[in-house]
Image (cartoon, rainbow, N blue to C red):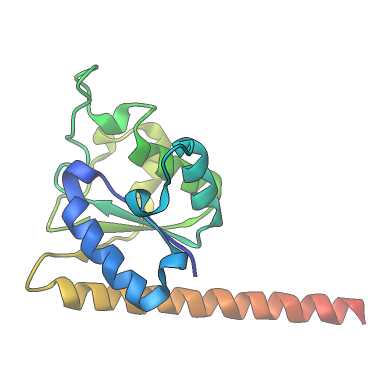
Length: 172
């Protein structure tokens, strides 16, 4: 099970780090992607992001209170509206590659409205969300998230097993 953590540093950096550490214990660092822990100096970040998203089974989209309100210093517009915003780029790559995206509301943040996100991300509004709160609920919420990821993993493994069995039967 490969997991990709999508987050905005200015918004959810602290919680993304805690979540990453907890998921590493459960799934192993080789199965997790988080930009600061996974992109090496000198690598072309867009290529690494695209490849990593395409290899992931689940993209965990952390949505905090500033997810839509962080402003690009050059344009003065919300960063999520900028074509070069890496949070947007990762989610668009997830959609292009037909990856499962789990929207995770962080610390009681409001869910984005249609007018706050670009048209290329409107599909996010159709996804049921889960929540990860700060202390004292963090551990409980992350345990619930891990259980759901394991359920998804088990369903994927079962589907792959059945597909392989069908291929083998076709050969006979």
